[in-house]
Image 1: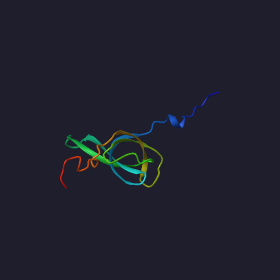
Image 2: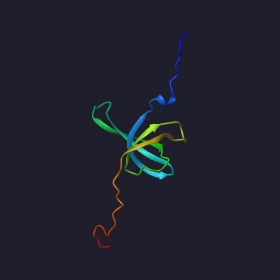
Image 3: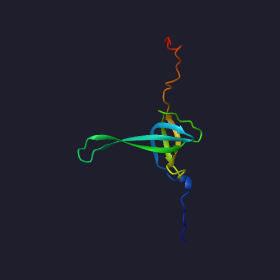
Image 4: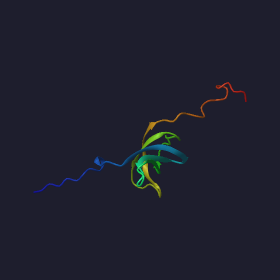
Length: 106
């Protein structure tokens, strides 16, 4: 008698991408730009290609400039088919310094 095994859903490998957060202006949604280097089809010179993905960020942990990993998931809205996996590298806080800290006369 042949035995059939079905793959468990948590054993599936989901598609993952790494990119930079370019927008956090929506609630629970971030826009991630993924860049890749590919040769030009005719001239064979390496060119950069960019694509933006909308990803679900439940706790709003990502900030603009962060490098994040996004994971493919079920469709959550018209454009959102990814969710935030983890933050790989945080961006530097630009607006954290006050004029008094920099000895600048205002």
